[in-house]
Image 1: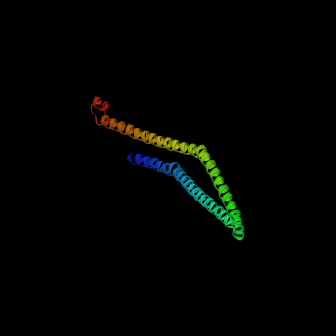
Image 2 (image 1 turned 90 degrees about the horizontal axis):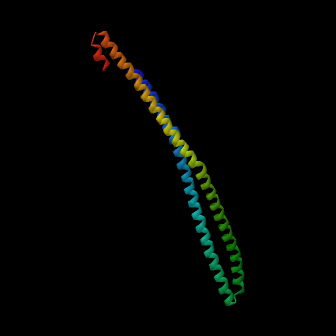
Image 3 (image 1 turned 45 degrees about the horizontal axis):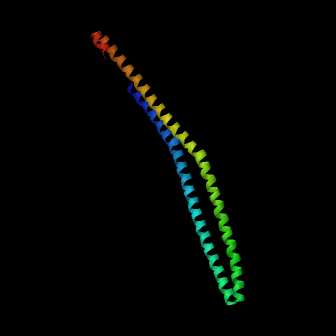
Length: 171
């Protein structure tokens, strides 16, 4: 009878272990992976913003250089500055578009994360705890069954031994 208990308890513990790994562990692993991806995307956004600011600063310097060259009457230098300004205006515009695009994508991903992943994690955690409770109930039922059998066995042994029946009732 004790071996039955041991076997049943082992089965329940294996099931609980699987529950720990697959229901809870995998969900948390996926959740962490998404958070790491979001962090990488935010890091990329910071880089794009920095590049955009740098391009704006360079554009301002090129405009300053053009104004200085214009004031000094250096036509060749003014023409070069105008080419540089066009290049840097394009660069600033491209960086701004990239920044706005990555910001929009991050907002969309965060919205999806909040709507879908938070719900899925809640469901997984709820499922995990429900399975854990079910396993604990199974453990309790198994123990109760074994204890009942054990008490009945003791009662039968007492009666067979001719012991006082009143003593057997209190076991």
